[in-house]
Length: 147
Image (cartoon, rainbow, N blue to C red):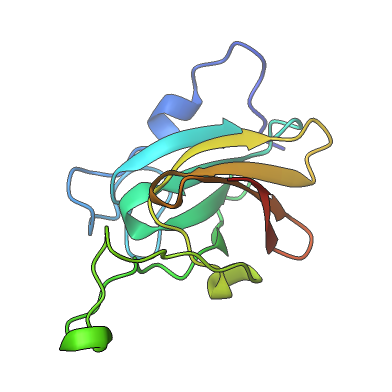
């Protein structure tokens, strides 16, 4: 079993994606790559990490043990759509916010993460929604903490 020991810097080489957001470089391959990942939080057990993949608008998880990756929450799209009148959405002109389970939740540039000491919850700073949200890891359900 691979874990991240306290004070270890070994995660630095594991979580790197090569250059461009479509790249799949580094030790772990993320579907769609990483696009401006702003925050990483390691689980209390040291067996996996959570990543705020800011410009992909999702939270991802990577296992240090087997290298598996998964989407925790977020649809992968910001609040933006081409269109006329009320059918047009712009990143700064709409909420881009929805609670839900897994990919049914909407984030708009998640930028900060913290893991609860029991390892069952993640707290997310949802930057452009001006909210602090939680994710219950067993169900991937999101909710509002503040904002």
